Image (cartoon, rainbow, N blue to C red):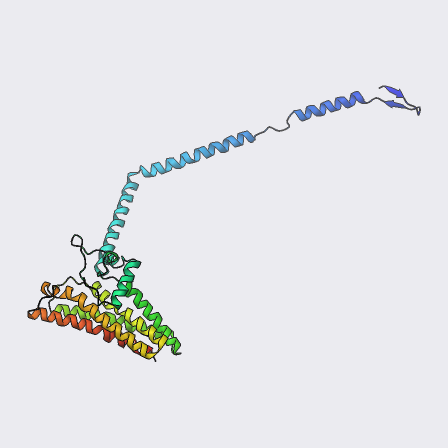
Amino acid sequence: MDYTPTQSGFRQRKLQPNMRQRNSSADGLEGSQLFEDTSGAAHGLQTGNQQAGPQAAGFTGQSILSDPMSNLAMAYGSSLASQGREMVDKNLDRFIPISKMKYYFAVDTVYVGKKLGLLVFPYMHENWEVRYQQDTPVAPRFDVNAPDLYIPAMGFITYVLVAGLALGTQNRFSPELLGVQASSAFVWLIMEVLAVLLSLYLVTANTDLTTIDLLAFSGYKYVGMIIGVVAGLLFGRPAYYLSLLWCCAAIFVFMIRTLRLKLLSDAAAEGRLVRGTRNQLRMYLTMSIAAAQPIFMYWLTYHLIR
């Protein structure tokens, strides 16, 4: 050990070589790793598992798809599903012709406006024939004379709402009474269509009128009923009678000019003299259907105006 004299008289030990040795030994310990770094191996193992996972899944899916029994079961299940769908569509179309229903709702705004004008003022309209394209009637949006179900459906719903409004203004509104109003209107509509079908069967009329056509023609009267009730609510009972009278006359003319092309013979459609007992019965039936519309219009609306 080395000692160096100081001003105080004491000697100081030289520790610099030893300090350097300890520092160097500490650096050596820091340089050498105490534990082996296994993070790279773990990462490689995880990557290998991720790569092996999709391969294993793909192998399992391929083995299932390559199994003949699985393929046979899938084919049998798909055939059963297709047969069940065809059976449901066939039976449903027998009672509710969905494919034909789409035709009656193929309307647009222009058609609805023209049809409403024709129902309210049919006197100036000349051509009442329905246009055909390759023995198929064109869609209603292309022909104002074609029947539709959009206006009757919306007319029925609007009529029920207007009836509820009229009952509310008279302090007679109740959900039960509104339900009775809607159900009675619907029942009268069904009875009217059934009566017309029975009459067509009795007179043995060969016509292209379908049940949906009759439902559409019978539902057009709701437009006049709504006009009459709204006029009565706004301007009183005299306005109700005047507007209803106008709409009754309009629907009568509309039904006569529309149904005569459907029920009468070609000679009647061309305006020539109608001869024969069968044509006479068809003419009476046409006038009866047209005359029934004002009766239903008054019967379903008179109690709403007081």
